[in-house]
Length: 169
Image (tube, rainbow, N blue to C red; front, side, top):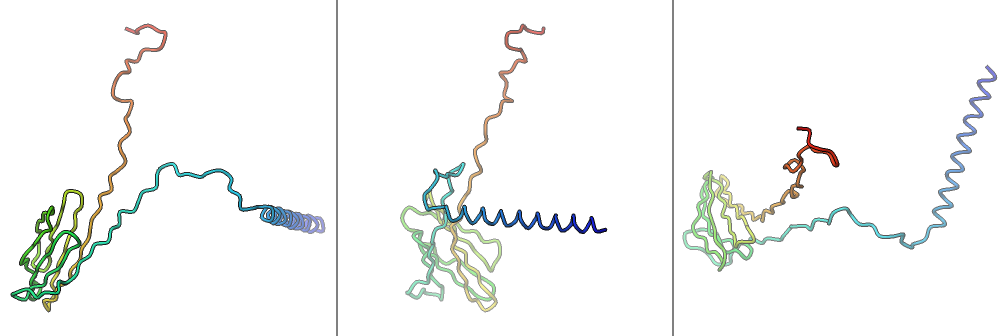
């Protein structure tokens, strides 16, 4: 029994001494470090740039005949919508020169007008609530393309002959 106690105490003492040596070594390394760089670090691929863009939508200052609300949608143009309880209606779209637009409305309470100029697409969404209040939102979806496929060696050219050998036929 006494022997097990001595071995246990010796093992605990050895672990404690090893820990103290490790701490001392780390402190020594940290104190010896300076601010000089050691080489250059680069990623395996280029970092992707953020495609986030700020898109503005705001109420126009002029009143629109018939009670509609006019929204200016970034640089794409203006959209005028009217509403009643849970129903929104497109009154007018005036695209900026170089922009075209299309309407999508699958329910009576929400419509979407998409503007495009060939390089950008801006989507204006208007929703009417039970009181006829219009909530508008603008987004600019970005398309992330998957990485290009790598060519495979399965396309032929291998006729199962060995270098220096003849045809098995």
